[in-house]
Image 1: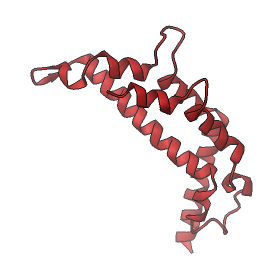
Image 2: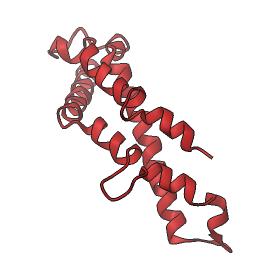
Image 3: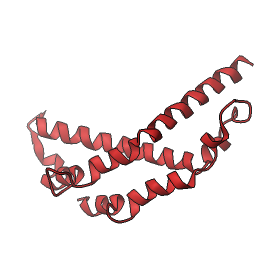
Length: 143
């Protein structure tokens, strides 16, 4: 019984965290931060990194240059962002609820785990539709 209570608390904390990310528009802000042109540049940060030079050509002997290190860190952050987007889309489609053994036994509001097509559509619009077309632009920018 304590295992059910523990997993129920963990599930509730996950849903609370996901809700905070949604309410702060985290996914949209960060997708545009990495993949959309900024006010200072006509190209995206992702485009700037992958088009400047081959990441492997920026080695200085056995040392990694500061620019290469920064670029690797940004690409690593982008990878985690895209992983988070995949988890978020999975959740917005209502699929995460069916995989939780404690779903029925918690006091979680049904709207938190029920499919949310409007929010899902917002993220998909940023990823695949004009004016951002984040995924298309990312694929075009890849070396």
